[in-house]
Length: 308
Image 1 (tube, rainbow, N blue to C red):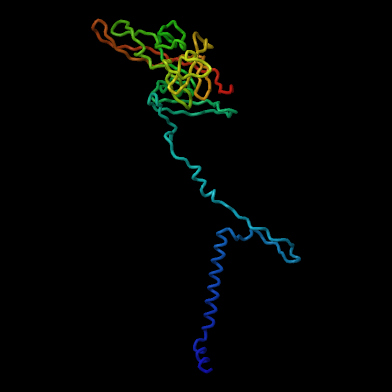
Image 2 (cartoon, one colour):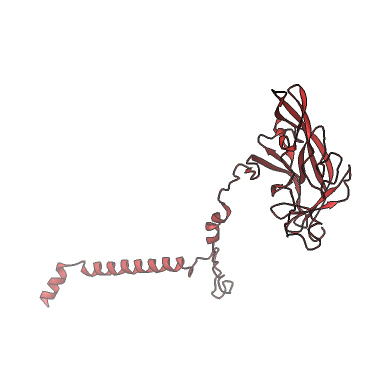
């Protein structure tokens, strides 16, 4: 009995230390459980004061805690940021000519179908319109059109390789010969000296060369190969209109693979850069130039496959 009292007296704080350790351990465990429950969304403190559920304190159960899921906000940036494409600065490469082009839409109106109602501009580096010959200074209208280059002496889009033939669609051929003053005389030159083909430009689709059908068996089901004498490598099919709305000869009705139709029947002509040529007259070599014009045929009507 004395020995036991003596041992206890020699460690007066032993019981207190044990109680303190037990209390600290309980606090740590309780804190860990509270943090785990809150992280799992099992516990959340109410946003406002809790109504007293005791008699006389307003009655009713406390409002349930609100749980917020904001993971979408954290990962949404991955959906908004897009990879940089080849047209970072608004430029594109014309796959037909290899030139650098810029396009800009000035006005656009929303519609009830897929046809775009817009007015835009196009600028091709190195083209003659960059010297101020475009419809917007050194920019051109970014609108659908057919175009070709003709000699100024024969300033039209002809057919049958003859300057008096205006069956430009049903008898599509090279332009007629022209002349240029070289080495002291007038020499004749074929279209190879000044012409680069017939082209169709559609905004968003770029340039396409118009080709004469030569045994190609692909054509729309509403006609025959003879009905569509002109086509492109991208499977656009062009039939002939009997006349233009402002000139002589045929127009074109172009149909895209998705069924959209463009009625090209309004002609416009503007000056174009000259083509330099060389020749020999009686053993004397010389150079000269063929004056040229550019011929556009613009659409007056565009319809989708549903007639809109």
